[in-house]
Image 1: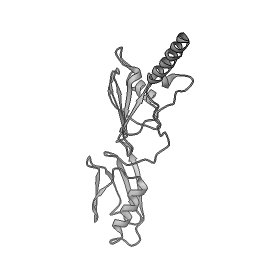
Image 2 (image 1 turned 90 degrees about the vertical axis):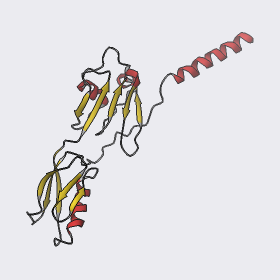
Image 3 (image 1 turned 135 degrees about the vertical axis):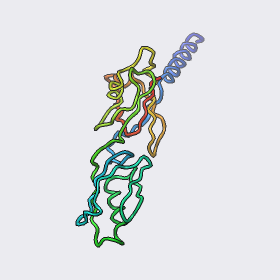
Length: 190
């Protein structure tokens, strides 16, 4: 009975230790998010029947735009619809029934950053849905010294935090979940 008990405990110990070898899967939200205006974006702001107030302007590095009559307005972090509604409220004392439309003419703020053991670390534009694998490919792939199973994605949104990612899990045929990047994500390849 001693050999059977020792064998059982050995098998149980190996199973428990092998369960600790992988990092826990983090629940990642890959759902579509509405576009949020960012610093350095260029906006077309149209006020119907008022060409004096309509203009094309860049979002300054501090996140604000300057509009006649209402002054400084925080644009970064808002959707175009939210900004249009805010401008409409601001113009009401000066314009009878203002109708405001905000169109993002140039998207300059949407970037991801890749750093660490990749061939070409740097900032890359985020055009459409870009996965983690695609961003690593844009950065030229891993160097010879990369720890591809120790990747961390640092996300600076309302939930924030770090998302550990194993490259071997991403490319495995049975369970790899793609991670869709968001503006401002930083990919660290140790």
